[in-house]
Amino acid sequence: MLRLTTGRVGCLLARRATAAVTTSSTRMASKEVSESVDMSQPMYWDRVDIPLPDKPYKDVLTDADKSLKQKEKGPWGQLTKEEKIALYRLTFCKTYPEMKQQTAEWKTVIGGIFFFLGFTGIVIWWQSVYVYPPRPRTFDDEWKSQQLKRMLDMKINPIQGISAKWDYEKGQWK
Image (cartoon, rainbow, N blue to C red; front, top):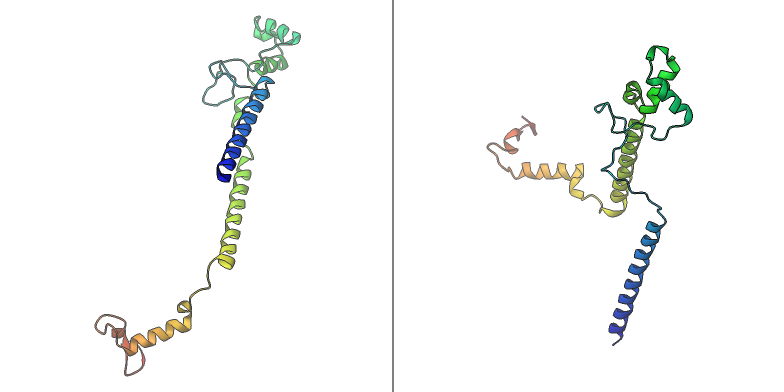
């Protein structure tokens, strides 16, 4: 009887937790905490392989930008260098050299790799000290030499094996 009651209490708590999570996500959606992006709309991005983005960099133009756009319709020889650059920056955020400029991201990647390698080394060291049993005595050099001596004394595989390479009269390897 007690087992049945605890099961019902657990089910009730699970339902309340689920309801709390769904209502909090509903509240978050109503306050527009996260903005969803409509990927079907034209977007702006700087990419070397796509020289002309779907839309200009600046959508909303100030009065100075609007007057500059009016000047753009006239002869370009009358525009100053600064005005031409400003017109370019209305349409594009970065130039090709700016897009091709290398970033320092490789330093972060290498640092992350070294961090995880160091962490892995610490875990392996910890396991060798606290988890794995001690090495068996059969791996010791003394044990291996005694085992080799025993194999030679028993003349194991005397035709092509280890005993064939031992000179029993001189007591050394051939």
